[in-house]
Length: 325
Image 1 (cartoon, one colour):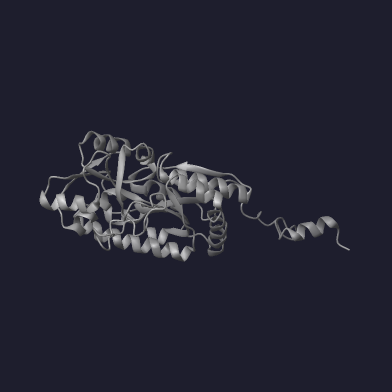
Image 2 (cartoon, rainbow, N blue to C red):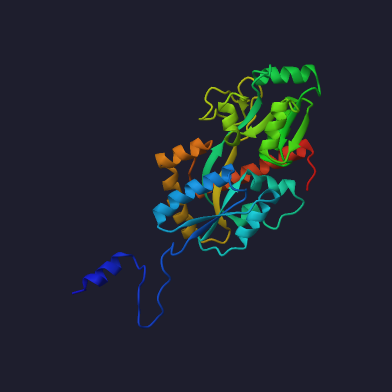
């Protein structure tokens, strides 16, 4: 009769199967901390998402999830760190819109986002809003377009850096509406908001998470969101498609990816674990508080999203005649 100890070891599914004729098998994943590279500085939407999802994954997997912030060059610095890592499930990355934009924004990349980033799961989507100071006479997108057509060049638009989702949302807005406006870029959100409140720019495109305090305080007013559907956190704010620009759709998102050579079985396991935590009410509420609507889904769905976004932003950048960097 087998001993109770042997029965227990068998039930663990081969976590440590010993044999006199061969070395011990590797311990089941995960046997050590998992690193998640984030292409933005601490405190941003991608970072907040990574920390929330990472904490939930750590509790589920029994291993720490360590956040490694690698901002710079439109996500290229982070992606280089990921693609240099072993494809063993211990190094992952939060991919963002920046990784779909980069192939058309830069003259060359040291990686191919469709080949070298293995999709795991879509983490969330978050709203980009068209915002004005609370005292602005502009109440709707129709008001804005009417003024821009009545007074060409009189309205300027503020965004953060060239090539950001916000900057390209403004470029697409002008192209779709057929209007002229100067786009003024700022290095970060605080400088953009200061300029907007001071009247240096008339309107701005910005994600809602970092400006939620000013929206709640009544200093800033969103007049539209850029996604195809209204934002869960701003249900009363219309989309730009509603009565202004049919077909306009800019959705900002983040996702979890692995190095491109990661085995399919490992991708499937990572997808199951991440998809499970994204379905929990506690995590969904935590993400929504940061302005992120939790998603989830299959690796195939994320692969299709990434491919469609690469193609979409190539068209936007070409139409806006944004010079490659």
